[in-house]
Length: 473
Image (cartoon, rainbow, N blue to C red):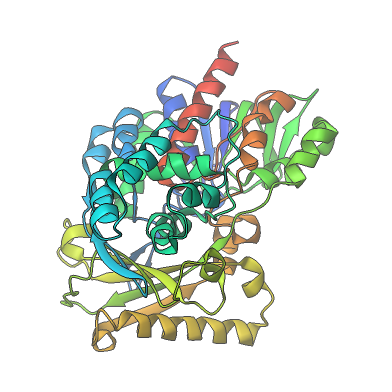
């Protein structure tokens, strides 16, 4: 079994998977379970992709990058395609809060609770609320409806920016959605979240990924870390291998879990594709990026019960473009109470992670000194914003640091540090990749539907089935 970085790849494979994000890992696990010989390659020094973590101060502090939160559907996906132990560790976050100049509400983020809030707090007529949710439920991915998110909200809640903020802002934070994106993307994603609430993995991402690694090894998947793929090798428009550290590894099929633009434009020779396909790939728009401030607290610190997720803003109205400003006015606090998040560790410390959406170009253009100054200012503004909920936090704070789109780009290799993959048009290119180059598939964050923990895992399921069908022929 290949697992150690020091081991060399000395076999041919049925399937090679480039990138060990949740889509790549899930596809690898399914194909390994089906008896195919699978190689999982990861450029980083650990599995997980965006489902990752880091330690500080000799592991006294552990920070989850993207643990909060995902839909209830993740339970079924993990039970079916991973194992029962993983599925049973997924729990609901019942305290989601909104705090901004337009309203302050607490919700369980379920359809029932949202219905009640829209009727009682926002004074929307019950029949309008019912019609809105029925409209979302009837949306179909294959419909040709060109309605945008903005048009959807104006149809049901004309002139109600506060309602739009309530319904849209969490999705903007979660995957970069805007009012100009197709309404179908909102309908599917938000309906999934609202059906039974927002969930997270109890135990922490490090525990989750370790369990997934054990399952991969159990299903005979070979894993090679610190193995960046330099090139996808083809012959007569069919994949034959990958080049890793100058060595060609033969393979019958490939799933790229990297960015779809990078896969098409950088990893495969252009003559393999039709000119029309290349043009479509070049026109895929990257989604926006994000910044985080990670705050770890001293041993014994008891956090105030401020909520599990807090969507907070000082901006007077909901304007999606303002969420991307370098000068932040809106942020999400993910609160990690150790007794809830990591009950298996009696020494676990409390942590809070602040997350904001942003534009890569704002940070990429900064000089070294200006970049460090901007990060320091972001940290200070974040602490000031958090003091509203935790007034004496500085007395308890032990470690703090910030990440920017440049950090995302460095560790994930995503172009422009895109935290949310591509815009909607990336999905068509992704799903048709194997029609251009036989045996070449893609599973990654393309369009809003195939992003986030559940979207990524389920896309891995879809593409693993496509690969199995291809190999069986």
